[in-house]
Length: 233
Image 1 (cartoon, rainbow, N blue to C red):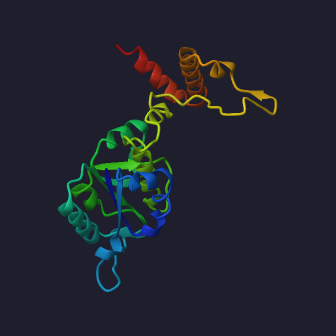
Image 2 (cartoon, rainbow, N blue to C red; image 1 turned 180 degrees about the horizontal axis):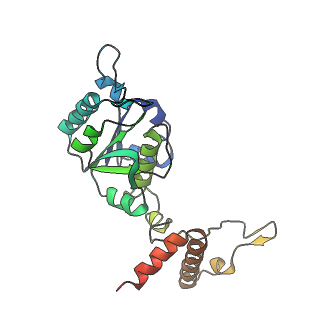
Image 3 (cartoon, one colour; image 1 turned 180 degrees about the vertical axis):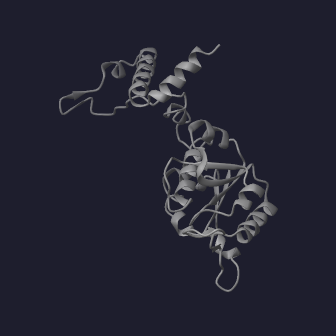
């Protein structure tokens, strides 16, 4: 799978994209990440990529010409399943969307900055807009890193244990159950006996019950959606 990321601050992506699971996935050839500096397509001697907004107001807007030139260059080299713009007013990222994107071959990510990108780029090139939450970041770089990480761990072969991703929170619409490791006794607190029993069916039932209860208490919105899906014919 390949991600191409267009940004005005490529250095912001150096650390999150080159450690841990993402690093190992790239070393194994399961993941390819290209980070492209938009300023290479900037205008004039100063490689300008932004300008004042029409109609006035504070902040700057990313110009359409550098973005269009960069996107067209990328598209001349490969076909993209989606051209994704990271923006606060996009579709909220969730596990179902990550699952869908993990089936892609090539994804192009556009990182907004300043007050965002010219609307005409969104209309002409962008096929999917994604938000990672109801808040505003200084730019789309960190959001892009979150998206790459969330999608990459779903690619077959990336995780050492293929079942690990299937047990994550949200995969079945519920939060994950509590987890424990050694020692079985720590500071007067014990691991639930069922987890030490070796009885797979009882352990699975316990985990499901814990997921239900944790979701009901912490995310009642998710719990209600899960109940509705279970009751649907």
